[in-house]
Length: 419
Ligand SMILES: Nc1nc2c(c(=O)[nH]1)N[C@H]1C(S)=C(S)[C@@H](COP(=O)(O)OP(=O)(O)OC[C@H]3O[C@@H](n4cnc5c(N)ncnc54)[C@H](O)[C@@H]3O)O[C@H]1N2
Ligand code: MOO
Ligand SMILES: [Mg+2]
Image 1 (cartoon, helix red, strand yellow):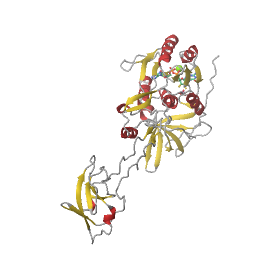
Image 2: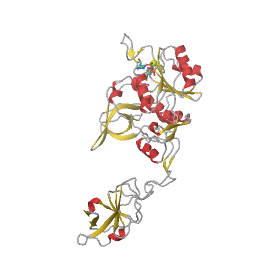
Image 3: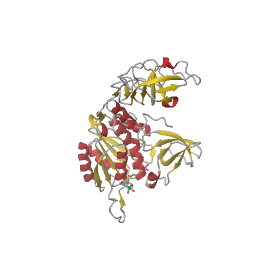
Image 4: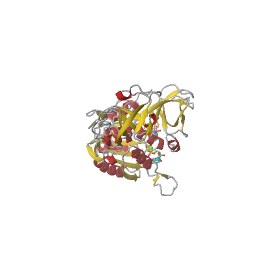
């Protein structure tokens, strides 16, 4: 008699996984390698930004008090006593009706408290005139207006995107403390599998899940150890997974998690003494997704069906692997969109339908990306999002507003508020 699997609600299944996450240790990398990593320590401003009062324009630094009364009828004249570009510091103090010709980014000279843009002047040799008065600090970029020394600019746990790289460089972080990347082993199981370069034979198919998962990992900045593919052989699977568990923070397998006579992953988990967090989820596709945990290592048993495999990775492996690195936004970002197709047949399970998300002038729309079955590979290629249809007794009609998960973004969100 087959063991009856108890399908867990998706939310609970994700929670079970996330509860097992412990942070990996940190390492230091040169700034050039920091993009895509997770910041392990907050970035604190090591100085004010800007570090000095500076000119935001190419023009002339003057004393605002000297500009009082300037008008079109009564232009006021200034004498240029120095000329500086960004990087230079004037040694002059600006006196009455004097000016320093100054370029964008150069520090304000002593005495001056306003900048006249080049376009606001009429220049004549070493002098220029203006036709309007300037307020104190007009056109001055103030020391510390962007960041104050000591302020935390970016919190630990943040994905290092190009803007974060800019801040790291600003504050002199030539080396950056980041979370170590998880070591992830990847194994495809299935006697039917042949490699991408091999010809098809009767009963065989090419292993698409392996390369797909490797690419899903690469998109998250995580490399994987390719453990190749194995036939449906319990002992061979057990030996390989056992070895991988010792070396990896997570082992991802595809296939062999259902109830078939050649689905050996459940037996492998049992022989490993792994704690199976769940082996059935209230979702389609990917209902047989299994997650287990042994000796601090995650075992993600993804379904062999390509769409189910893809969804299982994005819903469970992705947030867990990001959270292992301390990423504070491990969940796929989500949106609302108007459905462009009918799903009238109610389904007791939540559905994650591979879909095409487009934003239009009248709002976001979403349509299925094609053949909508667990075993579809083409809809994964055509889609950029999931339509999330909550399970229950109702169907969904064209025109309904639905939740959408966006796939492939650099940054996620810290939690979901989905229906
Ligand atoms: N009696 C039942 N049968 C099935 C159930 C069930 O509950 N009762 N669940 C179905 C569901 S849902 C899914 S999903 C699949 C899951 O199967 P497995 O995870 O055990 O995967 P396999 O049996 O190994 O393969 C399924 C399918 O996927 C193809 N496959 C496998 N690996 C790859 C790969 N690397 N690249 C491309 N395609 C792959 C494989 O050839 C099979 O066609 O079980 C249902 N059955
Ligand atoms: O696990 Mo299956 O993917 O529900 O289709
Ligand atoms: Mg199977």
